[in-house]
Length: 519
Length: 91
Image 1 (cartoon, rainbow over the protein chains, first blue to last red):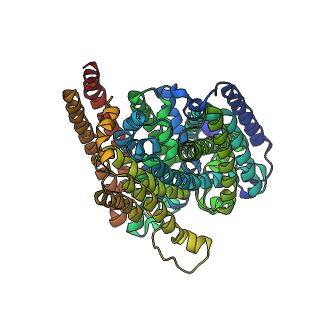
Image 2: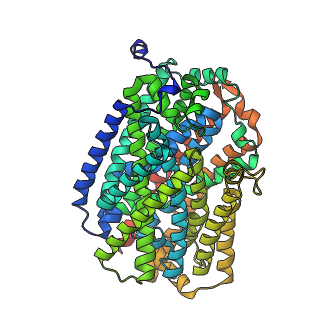
Image 3: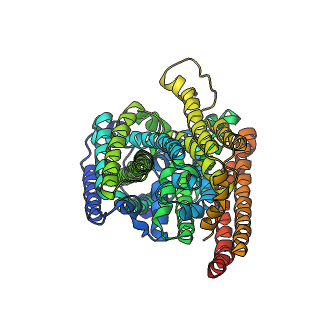
């Protein structure tokens, strides 16, 4: 078996050969776009009404939804970003792998089933269930859009670098292309198309990752510890926590954001409405966690594999964020054909995640803001769909702009920031609204706004923006991730403000909430 | 009708107790790991066997523990919780 792998034609890594027009990779790219647009066209004929556009009419099975959840979650950040972080920093990158997974049990225990039973399209449906609709929906939409923007930046940066690596286009042009294809997806297909794209992509991504990991392990006698030992010999200290978490509070802050962020991600929460009942929601989380866990365990292998086989110097030469470590590893192991395949998978990943994100952003803008706030619930189906499609275009354009502005950042790190905003802005209010009888409208709105804005402000004053991007000498806020401050603050504000106000109607309707959750 | 409301409240209390206990277990495991990373880096860097540091081993165990906790919850929900829901909706 070993000999077979060894006989594969091995390309040596030569950074100078990358970043030019690559016909094989382009063939794979066109093939994928053609197939997925075909699916989108087919699904477009099935998108008959608003419920189909957002949630595929509640007809997705638990297994399909588990794959789609995994597809939504395993973004470019996971595949490109974590592989890069591990390749460049060793053990520190694994903190992301583990943190991205441990949020899932919390989603399962606290969020998935109540959410399925209480809402219709967005998580704001749940928070607003027994509170006043208008203020809650406005606050929730602000939180949702902030999370989605940061998440989109990461995907756009990853896509831009990838297309630049394959086609040799300018980074900016690559971002514009991704943005346009993504808008076409969502506008014509809605959630059914997005769900199918996620499912196909989840299978491709898992398959590609397994294949890469097997090829890496084959070089080390199928023993991960031999690989880790080789990494430690080549670069000392990579098996222990290192410079990324040199400040202990930075590690804790990042850990909190990753753990509580999953339960506040609008595009993940929206997936629970695509299944028929609470039991299906439960089963879909089980499937999703199994797939995602396997995937993150394999990122250990990919990251250290790229570190040993490709080398940190070559990876840094292509991009400072290390985002191209996995594609470079693919080229080393299987030549240009394999690079083409992994690149197509990564591109599909990004496209699908961007589509899912845009869709939940469009839902917040059109369902929460337009239909429920501007038109006070009186908008017919055609109008809702038109507003949702317009919102999609708006978000697409915004994403392109942000992707160009944030060139050169590591994408897993950027997603870590999106998790921080989700954990502060959305998660506390969502949890308290389902769990605590005394929770009031004012408390919910205060918690969501304080959570969202405190994390945004702290990110602005963090070393990443102040020192790395704005080139100031120092930053007023020392932590790279704001979670340690903003998450407790959002909980505290939500609780204190609720205790100071009282809302008779919200308390009376709590029995109804309990009734709905447990049915 | 009063009966039903009370039964639902009791069930709600029970479900949240199970959910919060399991969430607490996950948080304890994960934050224990994070606190070790934050405050005892040399310990996590020590090698269990050549090539495998304690940090990597514990990381794999944290992921495994997430699976185990989910398995426990699904068993409880499928066996106990769903039955009680079914019993309540028949009333």
